[in-house]
Image 1 (tube, rainbow, N blue to C red):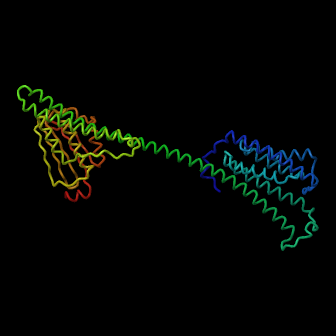
Image 2: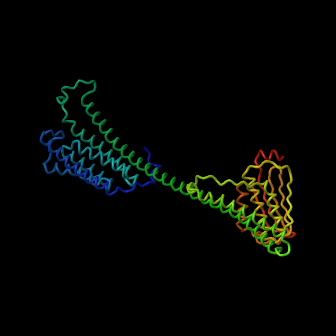
Length: 429
């Protein structure tokens, strides 16, 4: 199993609970290994030859098993100590049976699963396994003269008994050390993948939170734009009408009544728009981002009403529609209406103009909106007002462009172009 793609990741250090678990496991394995040594000593089955003193047997048994108590704290050191002690114990004919062998397996596994330096961990494991097979070959060579035919008196298989014993020992060790290496490497890879899954889950959680924040912010910007477009326009018209009413109130009551009626109608329309948008804000589903955008019924077919209201403020307002009108998508129609509305509002509020010219052109592939006046070309020309920002956002959302600035001969001009959808463009052509 290759470790090349994973060498950059370092497994987090074991927890305090894992350190305590290792301590208890190491103590338990040592006690059981000593008990196993007692049983082997009691049976007198010393397959490696006459054993050394009891004290030395205990020493080598403890040296093989006790280091497991710190196996995850210092995996490389533990693996080397256990391997050296195991070979030395066998060289001294200590009957190291199942539990010491298990301790060697656990040490190799831990080095593969927890070794922080992956290159060192891989080299140490390979080195220990090679040393173990070298010791196996050496021990077989040293004991070759001790093997007699009487030891295999009951042999009946097709393979020569000595060869069968050697192959069996080699096969057992290949499986033993191969599985220890593979299991350790697999455990480390599994830990890395768990870490990656946690990182991906956290990244997904952050992305979802950011997406929700962006959605909320986008909704706030949209509502703010709508509020500006609607309220600013209506309030500006009401202000102009109120001023006209004040000027003519004493000498022309009919004109004053007309202005007051226009103020009343504009105020009612403004309140209705505010209620529509505030209803969305009060909706509990809006916080979760699940509510649909409030329906905007304004469209390009209502531009004439805007021009009429501008005319009521005293402007000489004209509306010209050029080309064959086509059915527009609602979003494009709404954007066109809001652009005209904002431009007309700027004329009423800032321009001190006497004439207003609104032109809508249905071109072959584009819808063009052109609003101009003969005023002073003042504040909106800077292009930094919220209204002009809203215009640019609306036009950019449909892949169009907008230009706004003073006219060479005086006044101010707003020109916006938005591409028509393929169907509408075909009908316009």
